Image (tube, rainbow, N blue to C red; front, top):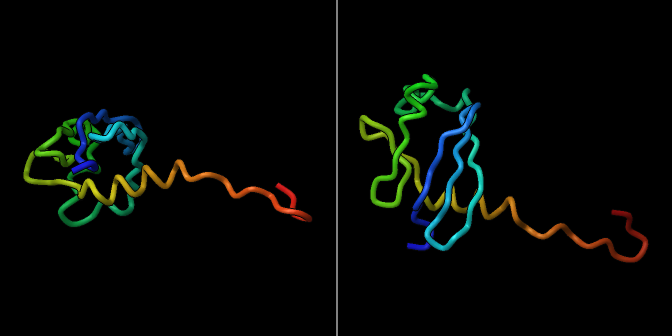
Length: 91
């Protein structure tokens, strides 16, 4: 699918740089307080850095993965065009 991840690089503060199959690139920020349950091991920064791609999805050892379609939507949303100011509206 177009949202398959083809490149991932871990960055500080639980951030991932991702490139998708269709060329879209961006950063996905995971909030530490949301890393609970099955995602709790990701709180360990050394473990977080062990990220890899598994059949188009972001994954870590222990069968931990993130849905690529949700990440794609988050990254694509970063590039939405700002609304143009109309008459009587300020930017």
